[in-house]
Structures are given as C-alpha cells and as structure tokens.
Image 1 (cartoon, one colour):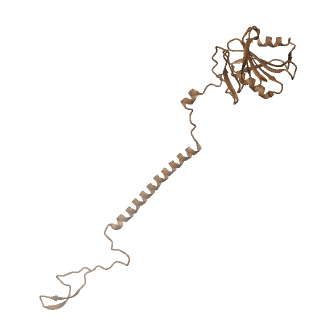
Image 2 (spheres, rainbow, N blue to C red):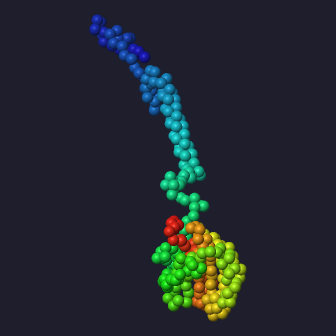
Length: 258
C-alpha cells in the first residue's frame, strides 16, 4: 500500500503534509506465521507432482509383485513335479534282454575248471582232478573231481547209445543200485534232462548219488553225478554243488558264452 507522510518541499523550502511527488514506497505486509510467501504458479504444479510420484510408486510395486509371483510359481513347479530322467543311451545299449541266456555267477567257494578232456565245469574250491578212465558204454571220457579225502566227488562222463530215460531204466536191473525215487525232469541254462537219486552199495554205507543225465547243445548225452559217503555232505550243500556244476557245464568243442 502507499502511505502519506511529511516531506520537505524544495520549492517552498518547508515541510509539507501529503505524498512525496518524487518518491513512492510499496510496503509488503508479512505473511502469516509459518507460511512462506507464495510464488506465482507454484500452488498449481504441486498436486500434479504428487500424482506423478504416486503413479510411479504404484507401478513399481505392481511390477515387483508380478516378479515375486512368477519366481514362486517356478519354485513350486520344481518342488512338486520333479522331472524323471530318461535312461541314457549307454544304459539302453548295454542292458541285455531278460530272455538272453547267461551263465550263473559262481558263488563263493567254487572255481571254474577247463578240463583237458575238453569240457568245462564248476567245482567246489579245493576239489581236484582225481583221474579219468574210458567212459561207460564206449563214452569218450570219464573224469572225477574229488575233495581232499576222496569221500565226495563229481563224476563227469559222456554216454552214448541211449537217452537219459533209458539209462535210468537200465539201472533198475543192477543189484547194487537202490533207487531213492523216480527220475525227475530238470533244466539248467543251456541243457535239460532227468535226475535221479540212488545208493550204490548198501544203504547208508555205500555211495549216495545225485545223477543228472542230459542231452547237451552238441546233441550228445552226458552225466554229471555227485557221489558222497554217508554224512560227508549235507543234503542242502549237495543240491547246491549239483546246481552250480550243471549251470556251468559246457561240452567239448562248444562255446557256451559263460
């Protein structure tokens, strides 16, 4: 506002009341306490600035929430749905079909032998070759593998001129043979035939025999027979010796793939 006051008038050389014709003064009243003087145009831009800031904050929060949700879904998928690995090419190529004939792994306490007569077989460890002779019925060989005191042995020989069934039938005519049952069919890897148990000599005093006769893959008939004295070999152990021998028998001049 413009206010009047006394001033010195140069023309009249005296003090006068009224407005100074050469000087005017604008007085600005102070603004209310705590408020800064307003700047023209500032009050209109401030609300716009706050709207922009709020929009940016909301957008950033939305993007962050979407990222966290995506990460959580991926972690959940990995936890609840693990992938099942496919079999490798090497595994598929080296795994034999279940029907492929394979030799029986030797149990502890057995060894494989390649006999000079041409056949191969598995016998208990410590059993050694105990001589040979011409086989019965004009067979090609007759070989024994016996334990240390010769109270148990495996006899291997080739039989000619008869089937396993006929050979067992012929045993019934011998006075020194005491049958313990009828012949039973069996199979062991690459061969099949008949098996019979009997005593040679007086029962409980002679030799107990588990005689397995079969036609091998070369078309010939063989016998693998376990002979034991009474009480020398337990029944369960005797059955095991026979099974291991048959599963690992291979006739002469034949590759059995053991």
